[in-house]
Image (tube, rainbow, N blue to C red):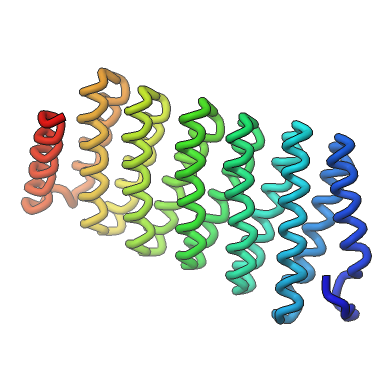
Length: 307
């Protein structure tokens, strides 16, 4: 940490001692002590975020963020999922606080650590801990979208996609299903702010996840993707985002065709119902959009015949 201590700033020795205490409690398996240290570090970080942004202050906060992440990793090794969950929540809170104070580099740093922790937790099979940190990613994604901070929004979505794929691979239903749900919510938040690029990005990511779910014959994941796309389709229809609505219909049709091919009858029915639902939303009645959907169907039929 830096050498100067201002009257407004936290006592730097207290910060160092708290970091040391956090590691000590984590290594000894002391859940209560670890959580208390993490929460105290959050308070320090919030105070530092509200100080003048200079190079020293930036380094101090980043050191704090990294330390919280490292304590979470020790907690994961000790199988203390609750401490892992608290760490993810705290880092998510720090990211949003930094974003709210227009300190985007700090927000990106905190969010990146939440994302990497989530992937580590999922890799270790810690479903509950990964589910909790997924919530932090989702909350940050929605919050940054409402602040129109597209870099943070895209970063949240990228990590949620990776976590979803990892969860499919590891069979972690809690984390994976939650990640897909939050992706859909971020897309809706972007649509509410009329951010077309982020909304479109969500639709494309959901399509990829739907295809991955079908390839793995994971019908519950596929149904969750379909529901997220349907909800997003309803929202973009209400916002008059015509091109994105066509993309969502495209995504649903691709998933429907693949589920039909794989014999996933429940998911196939859900995709068909979702397509019918967004078709009644009004915008897809336009002749040019219906023609586009026909082109999409012909394209997918051609691809399936080739394969």
